[in-house]
Image (cartoon, rainbow, N blue to C red; front, side):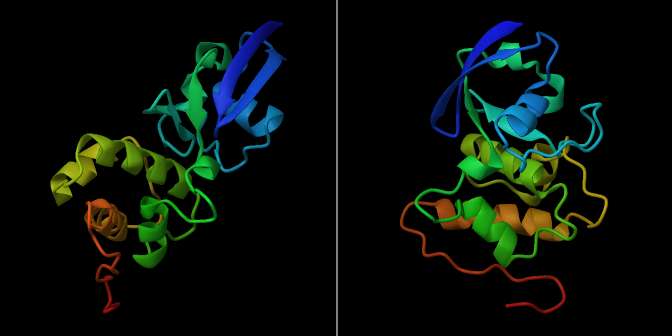
Amino acid sequence: MTQVRVTVDGVNYADEVEPRLLLAQYLRETLGKTGTLIGCDTSNCGACTVHLNGRSVKSCSVLAVQADGGEVTTIEGLARDGQLHPVQEAFRECHGLQCGYCTPGMIMAAVDLLGDNPDPTEHEVREGIEGNLCRCTGYQNIVRSVQSAAKNMKPGAVAQNAPVAGGGN
């Protein structure tokens, strides 16, 4: 067993873990962070995406011991004081999900993308989320959600709903 100390969603943890334990398993099984989903176990789908030290990573390809001393943010840690993160809100408003399985990882990847590029084009959004797969959608509302969040996150912006495919608002 190996000692791991990590801050997850602002809370400090110290646990003994098997050296081969994946970060995704640690988050889900030890800490109960079940919003971090395991979809493929091969790092292809991106459902397990979290932020490690401010950057998105696929937690099924990172060992828990590699996060030692680090800071992890999960989908559960994005909301603050009962308020959804602007990307979470945009996914809700713009119907950026269907079954919802890819949504936590997609949102985490989108938050990272917007941290690097606060005003991405449609093409840049598609490139920024390309490591996260959705089997239900054609990505249109996902892209629309990310772009809506980008607009709403600009200083002085007033949150507004983006138009939704099929005649939404």
